Length: 112
Image (cartoon, rainbow, N blue to C red; front, top):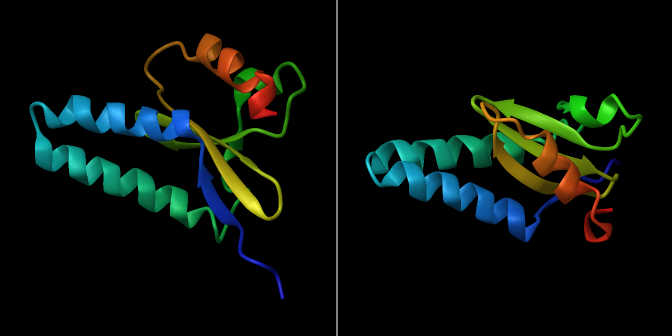
């Protein structure tokens, strides 16, 4: 029997998510709650299909293949799957140039 992986949110990823929700809630609280639910639902679905997300293109170009991402337009949810757990590392606005943020965050030793 295959064990279902657990989902762990890195503190910074949880902060990313709440920053998004807080920003939207200022003008549209119901929309903010809907977006929160949508992102959390898609992340929870990774338990059944953890390799569903694509390899992060910015990393793939340099041979780093163990980070994946879900696209929940316009956001990019970056995670790592390691058999028993899925670690959500970032939730970023995909309309911006996120390459520097990704490299800075995900190449730190504590994200290895």
